[in-house]
Length: 461
Ligand SMILES: [Zn+2]
Image (cartoon, rainbow, N blue to C red; front, side, top):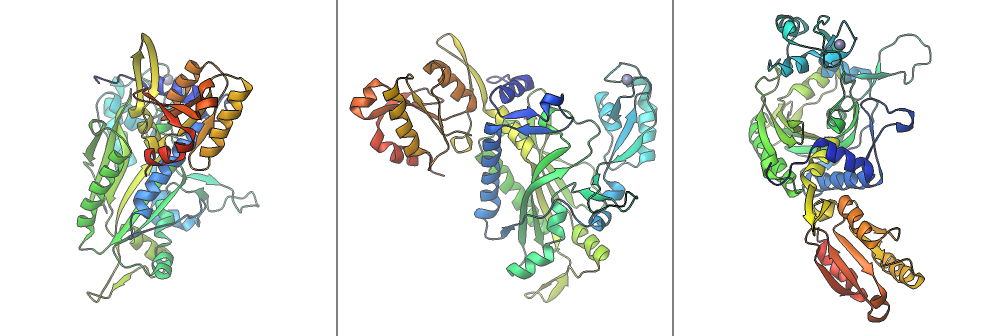
């Protein structure tokens, strides 16, 4: 890339150093496939979720929100097909016992397995290429046969006997909570097709090899919207949703050249069409960021059959009764978070020195305004605190008097803070402060009285 050759190590290092992302339980040596979001990461993720919610619910009269529980009746996962078919192909190195995904190993020698292959099919494919594949851990080429491994994470919720019962799972996706509430939502909200239900929430998958940082984790957060349509209009709605979601990602500041469409070559039997929006991640390359799928009437049909409840919809205009079709959009908060950080990360030279700056969209920045007294003189601290108190209820602000002003600017640049305010000795007499803009580093003098209006204009939603 011409202007931005950041690596994933640059991003991971900044995210750790500046309090965006920490390894889970780090003082105990971490915990595979799980990450914690630090103070600034929490703010950034919160802003991303708020932006998604505004785009998908706030600005759409045809979409409502939902917050369904992580735990569900185990029958949900039987009906949806997850207990039988939600699995990854596992192989084990006979020498060092490292477990790997067979499809990933095949991919490393440019053989592409279809995710819908049966255990036998992918087993045969792996067998025929086994001699060319080496273990990523020990370098040996000696593997067990392929076994499909179910990704659902189970729990002992409500089971006090110690005996084996039906597994109660932590949800593997948020979408099922939407399907099983279709009737409740359409009845209570008097929704007419087409309409959508949106949800943000945690999901859990027993990934065999969680890696690639926060791209593939065992605990993650999804933002999903299921849109219910008549059988005749689902593909039109699918096209509209594709365009809407692509533009929504661009509006967050993601660069167009780092986004592309990928059509699924092979569809699950019920799917009508499936596209991913891929992002060109540093070091990892093109990976799925968001999925947009036309799922036919599969989801409500299987839950109607499994539960016995009537999930059909009566269309008054046409006088027809049918099972609604579904088009969905699904994006992981972590994947979006990493894409946003990657596009924002810039290293540049300023007066012979390297400056790292996160050029985040102003509205997404974890801190909008940092208030910095020039030094630790009492009268400067008092004045700067006054400015902080004036602005903090309208904007996420930070107050910092710890180091030299140069170091504090660099710290705020790395967090992506769009504006720094410096309260200096002149401020005491002229009742004005210096406002420095992050990207241009241009400074201007603004009257303290006018700061609220000044920033109201800068942060028009
Ligand atoms: Zn090995």
